Image (cartoon, rainbow, N blue to C red; front, side, top):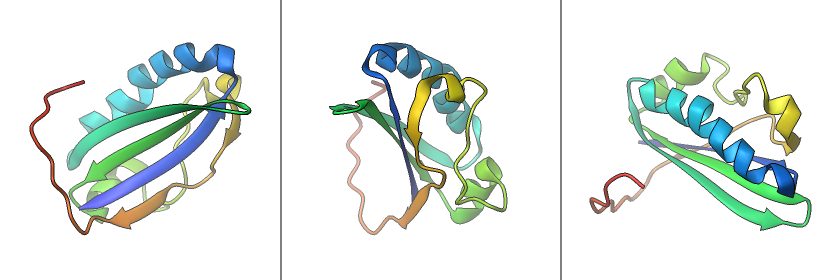
Length: 108
């Protein structure tokens, strides 16, 4: 299993709007790709505003490439990201999942 991680920062006053936007675009898009094993949108307050981390799990690197293409380390951006993001990582980081314990928590 592969974990894919990306981070970006929005102004504090845009945090709620960006979260809703990402639920409609990024989260929904990830979840539709065959081989996606979960999507977590994490959020925290930082000096610059609100930092978001998109953490996704994939059954394989091939599944990541179905989502992101052959240049899978390049971050994926959505049409209104320029409006919201004041800082962004231009690439995503990938990890091979060594150990996972996932109790059935249901959707959050």
